[in-house]
Amino acid sequence: MTSTLIEGLRSISLDVPDLAKAEAFYTKVWRLSVAERGNGALYLRGTGQDAYLLALHAGRHDAGMRHVTLRARSAAALEAIAAAAGKAGGAIVQPPRSLDDPAGGVGLTIRDPHGRRFQIVHGDARHAGDAPQDGPMRLAHVVLNSSAPDATRQFLEQVLDFRLIDLTAAIAFMNCNRDHHTIGVGLSDNDALNHVAFFMPDGDTLMRGGGRLKDAGYPIQWGPGRHGPGNNLFNYFIDPFGVVIEYTAEVQQVDNSYLPRGPEAWKWPPGRIDQWGLSDPPTQALKAAQKRIHFLPFPATFE
Image (cartoon, rainbow, N blue to C red; front, side):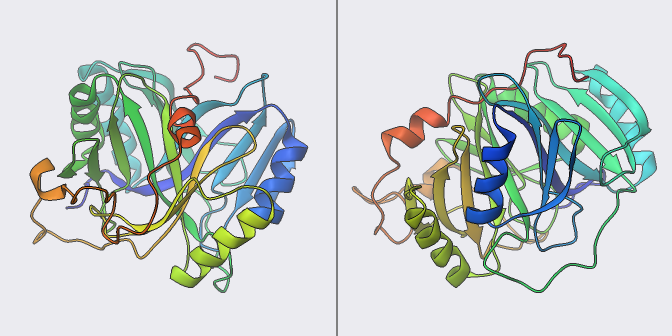
């Protein structure tokens, strides 16, 4: 269950209307730290090895998605992905070039047939990593809604060598490494960002994070609970700009012995929406936010 081309999820890039407000929330409440700032951008890192997890740019009045950044397994993978993108109905937004952000390396940006942009990097900087704290270590996964989920899934398979690992009535879980899933394709009537999940060191830090967010005026919108596919713990929140963010922990690790399952295997008894059955269903605010953040129109001025 390993992509020959993609090592994993590195970071997410967003436009937000207020960088100062973003910095206050994501450092004091969400518990990331500033890697670099300047030129209308803020780069935030966790305690893991990635140079940054979030790139936040001063943008328009509403938040918007720039791209999802994935790390390639080799320089040759960039060329293979560039060649495959057009054949699969996508396009090259930016051919491989040296990047001048805090992580550096060489980056390729492609878009799929529905306008989702993926930046694929190789040779980017990494840290030794810090001791685990009450904050995110790395990104765990991103879920992207799709009004054409079969086509989106095929693009990920044909261009990035992702594999379908589990399918529910709501999400196609796509795998590229030992984590159960790295990208989820939400079966939807829109093409918005569903949510971004941040990997926490353990269940205790996930729960303390929920309390910290609640104290700061950001109540849990869904959770705590334990998902079926991925077997991971979860708490969902909405950030100050309407972006759905998740604390997750204990993500299932898989290998080639894992047998993918379909929707029939992931049905819960009436009144239950996860393994435990303790949490209330997702709030209406969460459901609305999961349809709100879209990829910025192409072409955009930042390309």
